[in-house]
Image 1: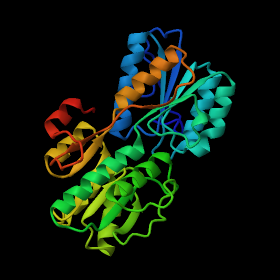
Image 2 (image 1 turned 30 degrees about the vertical axis):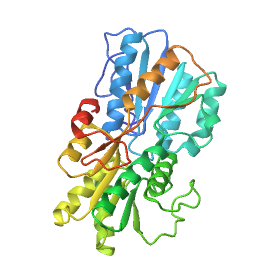
Image 3 (image 1 turned 90 degrees about the vertical axis):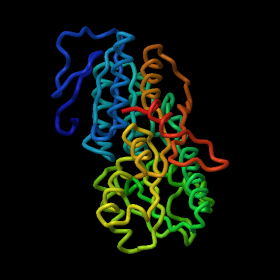
Length: 334
């Protein structure tokens, strides 16, 4: 589903399909727009489902848009303009490129529309009225600390590959990456900039676009260049899933510890199966619910609200708080 493709899904308090609004549902007096990066990532699917449920409970109209894929900010900008023209009271957006979207968001706010970022913060926090998201730096730091303790317990020195998000890193990419490296004990120099580290333990990096295919491609390329890689940090669970599949095909799945961030049920099951060492669980359902409520209640001045994160580990390590897979499966989404 994509604005670029001309297929806009209007969700009027309940679900819809094939780009058509539910014909038998009356819209509420408040209109909320939800703009996710893509409908191909379970994280954003779960977010949309949670928003759909909350608007139903509050009798609010929801119009949901998804881009062609991660990085498709142009369709998000057009969706923002369309929502403003149609009189939306608020817009919830997971920005594919926060910097590129600042102008569209500025115009929306000048028109009186409440704009709230979900999951991915804008670099300038004042660019939006509020943000509901994970502390992504903290989440990265948590998974980095766990990975270090796990390898050190096995007497291993890390040879690290990072499976990153986009060619032009966005805030969530930078925060997770830099948090992971800091958690591992690496000097990140400038916490707001990726790639300036001078640590021999970082063997290679690659851009996955947050997809399974990207994860598969990048780990194959990096393993080909650096066969000693034994730790792979992935920007999200789809990229981590692709990386594991590629390593399994190469017969190297037991040689590389994969860690990631998301916390979907599929990812937790992969931790249980030993495919991932650990993942950090986020709460996209909470982000969506809080965003819908903020628009419904016309709540400005929200600033940043940390929706929480918890480490789900196959094996606990001393000094790093975590939960096991059984509890993770009770709390996960998707």
